[in-house]
Length: 576
Image (cartoon, rainbow, N blue to C red; front, side, top):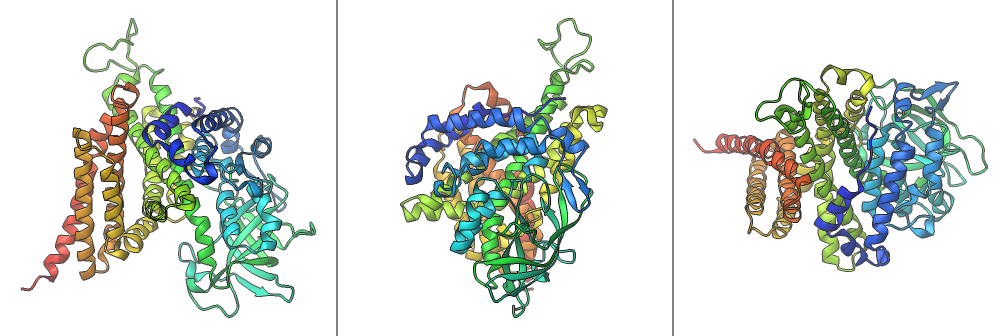
């Protein structure tokens, strides 16, 4: 069974050659000393650590899984040692501020790290997956006392954190949350209620777990505007156990190495984060960071599936491939599976998604730091616009491709892919949940179109598309083609804004199609950039060709769906 192995050289090409990230980041004050050599060293060490420490216990994580014993959760063999090495190596604190025990490195390095972690061992990576978001939430909204008590512990991974939103009767509809928090005379709150689907709600990786609980104060207004956020630790400052209980762990389709818990808060002690009834504002700091990380999970899982399928296709021989005899045939009676056109199409198409989406995701991570640290307010505004519009696109598109692409990679194995021996079926199972958590993909599409694109009549999206258009030369066919797609998307956005004014339900019906149009247009931009910087490199030629033949045609299909829906609205509203 092929074990996932990071490929730092590919990442460096995208970051350094295509994006020019080291120079852009070193121009920001916090990263003035973070040059290309330092970034390369971090990536090399991260790649070794992930391959040597994080990947090996992955199979036990799936086959043995977490166990629930007398109210306690025992993680799979090897997980505690691997997590301790993760903390001791300083990896959780990669991008946290130095004053909080962090290393103060750019967000894009953390993004690459979590992509690799997810690819190597998704179950284990779920444990520290919310650390960055919890850290940012407390850092921006927590009181000085909470920061002093919890910030460095979370930044360094000494304590893990959860995000407690979902309740049994309220999935994505947070306005129905019933968990209650009652103020106490000492300034604390008593939290009572139940939460479900809580990743890492209980485990044995750290002594303390910091729960960020979405709840409602007694005098809170109904709906989402009445939600508050309360920090509820597993262990109180004096070391006593808080009234927080795991009732059970879910038996899941995948992610067996991650404990997904049903939690009960029995008047547990906690402290308010941010203002009363402003919990969602504080929580969204955490959720937005988590959504980019989930997109990177999708990329990592798809890469893990591709690595397994590609290795198998270059070992297994089946029948004769059509066309001239391949050089690999020799005296063999059958050709390698990789020589068959149907298999090449599968493998090259997944690489087209992986490498193109990586460029978009890494650019987004760079924009996060520009939005926070650039001295130019206009640059910060552009960067924030990019992150707001592109993050939901990445989350939805990368996770959808992770599941469907991993299923295609399983197909390369034939019947062998359906049995556990080769490990590919685990990737298919593990990847499915990424389309659901941190906001379902349908919610991502609605968030993009209704709340972000149409909220300003499409002006922000148009500005973003002009920005990426201006980065292309238009002197090459590939650049001109990408520019044409961007122009079509701008026109579609204007058309959709006009039609939505006549039929408010329309955007909700076509949101998924619109998101796919945006993603494929951005992929066209990404492959134009990659093709320009690697014109003679065979490593990138096959996936670029696959993108143009097998991925890009979806652009016209989705564009046509949205256009016809808009035309139908216009026709209905036209005078007789």
